[in-house]
Image 1 (cartoon, rainbow, N blue to C red):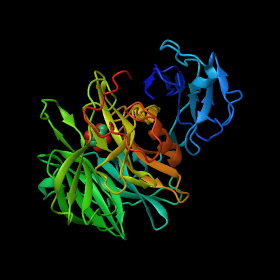
Image 2: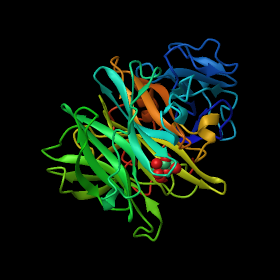
Image 3: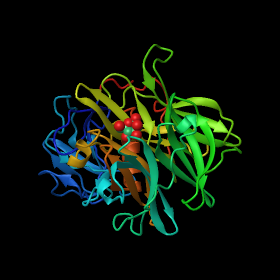
Image 4: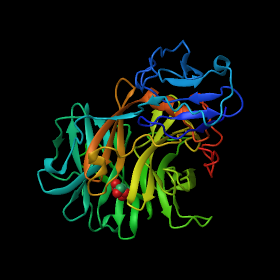
Length: 431
Ligand code: BMA
């Protein structure tokens, strides 16, 4: 079934779709929390149930979808008529929030630090000694960043901030001459691998340090030369090799286009890297993730593969907008993109995301899957000024992803989309 997306019709991100030709004739779908239709807004929710078709205008719809992610699909047998593209399900609305902001955001602000700092943002996140530990990028009034540890027993409140910087740049190292930034933490046994951006005199590059206690950090090696950033390790080896996601940027690619894409590289020993391949391509033109994309937190292992969250940068006359999208990589071979979401799933909306040192930025470097194996806490920098948190439901996120692939088709979880990994990916130009 081929879906064509209608213009946004209201609510936060409603998605109305029209299926050309074969049944179903009209489809309107959206990832919704819970299977009961909770989260629907508007006047067409009456009689909304998993089993019974419900009618909107001339169309009958039924709830479909895996797990407890609700989707709404037109049942052509029931409505029994072809529809034209001018008959979008425009009267239906859905309030769709895959990641829900914590009410008391921001959770960390510069004023909480015992010394004067300009901004606290882009924190790596991990569960350590039964608590949530954030390794926060702290920019002081010199403009240079270091990393500081903050801990909380519930991951939202009562943060205890180390009075001294936890991991400082080494001014004697070319790689870190202008600071260290944006850590992503991967736990490997009882060791924590911290992949961070070194701001070198030659531009940003990718560095690795390890720690067991978040008090002392051992510099391991420089993983990638400039310009490269937005990197994280997988927590396991694949056939004896480590895998790194990272984002080299070039002023021009082979086709003569400017671009920054997510790459995958391999190493037997965390020192020697090779087999570099482009994994996720930035789209072109007007897409939210055109030209420049980069990994957010480290990949998260799910029953369907490695879930990745990445940022896309939209350049406008008023500046850049950083938004987030999702994709799934194969569990055994992370070089395979299984599906890739078409639209952004989180973007700057709140005042604390829309204004600050760098307006219109949400920039996550860490997420934590809670013990229930469903709740994901996403830690992100807001406007390069504060640290915030939002929560999502893993089943809901995955269900949404498989129903909002860039190819325009509905996939069942576990399927591999032949389009998602290819370039150019804007093949469904009718979106
Ligand atoms: C990126 C990184 C991030 C920053 C973002 C928005 O390139 O430098 O540290 O949050 O830009 O300014």
